[in-house]
Length: 167
Ligand SMILES: [Zn+2]
Ligand SMILES: [Zn+2]
Image (cartoon, rainbow, N blue to C red; front, side):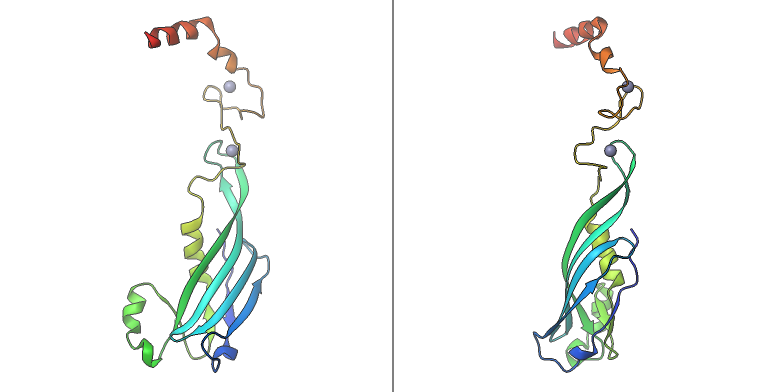
């Protein structure tokens, strides 16, 4: 997964009231196909509401073919404003892996998107929904190539074996 550097200038939220928000679009870049972001001013900093479509290269878990896969990434994450009275326990927050920004109001969400992306990415990606994988006998793509191995399963010797198993 290739997440581009995502830094936003939120200085207009510095004097905003809680609940005020700012919208940003992410244009196609790296693994990001498209993304909508909303930054909302909250007591402790800024709440990011992210709605991103990620596209990246996978190796199909059934047939091992390389393919592109897409999945939606939707998450909310609070970025804590460093130096605020309310956030005097910020060092503890940092230990917990919370995200922060400072008085410049430049907010870097790259790491948050990467972390959520990794957690959300399909564990066993498929090249396509109905990929049937590889022929266990010759390694051909089932459903794409007609390798002929299926004949083996109807070989009388195999039938005799399966008959034995059923007894
Ligand atoms: Zn596949
Ligand atoms: Zn085969």
